[in-house]
Image 1 (tube, rainbow, N blue to C red):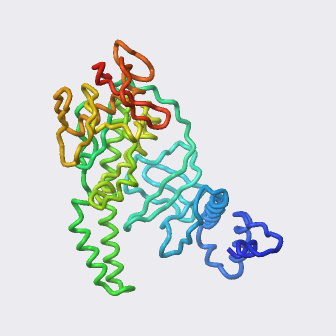
Image 2 (cartoon, rainbow, N blue to C red; image 1 turned 180 degrees about the horizontal axis):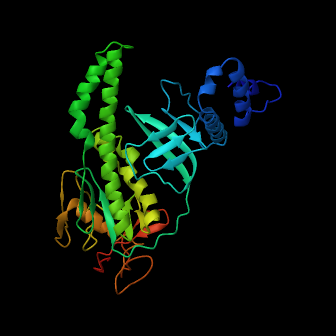
Image 3 (cartoon, helix red, strand yellow; image 1 turned 180 degrees about the vertical axis):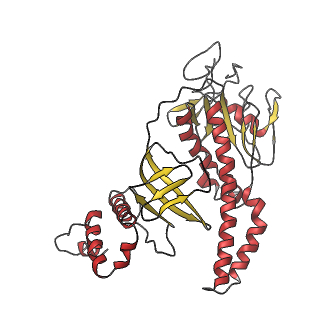
Length: 368
């Protein structure tokens, strides 16, 4: 910080210290002012300084904001260690800490080369995550159906093949208990032991809510990525939708963005393909049978009734069927083209980026 302030003055600029420079300075302080640091592993402060160096580089190159100060009380609650780290059975060996047993088994790789281990604390529980180097073969492409997936609030997601993924509604289920714990914290004297215990109980409740949400999302995304060849989801403006104070809590509780994030990397792991439909594609207002598009579709209408052909279906299922017919996925026996279903007459289109959706109401063709 001092070097940055000096560089703002009309004098020759001073080189910013790197992680190596800061580590050498820290070693000098250990011998004089900070001898207690010899009791802990050298890797924790050294890797923290490397992270600080990367954070400032990202800031100066415009990739991130200014690094935030993290104290002992208000920090990340984690530290990183490097070699030597060994995993054997239900134990892990960390520098200066020795062998530590696991509460859970079968997660950490034993034969892979371990670069580092990050130890973190959350709601009174300690976790370790490993950074490993492991050769991974390209997965074989999944032979299965291409499906559209419509995310919602009543249900977490509805798949075009009729499968409905239930929404756990973790926040709604625990909201009453959460309010009680928050009131208990506010009534305790600041700095007291009772307040610290109340904060821990509140943190455990938040952790339980988060784990319920993560469990449902991981089970749903893994099931889709391992069984479907192509998964089509809609590009939603989640941040803008959160501005609606009537739906913000429910949208945040559903985890729409996390749902797509998990599908992105799991589809690469298991050999499936994720396709994101355009944001302006009218999946809710469009009829999945004839292609007719309504002028509007109110949120309280849970059943879609087509004005053109009389097709009736659940609102979310109809949207999922429309996503299944997205141009880069849809096919027919008559027109097996790469860019989707052809139409006889040009219809109003919905453009998003470089992809185009064509209305097939006149032709009557249906994507498979």
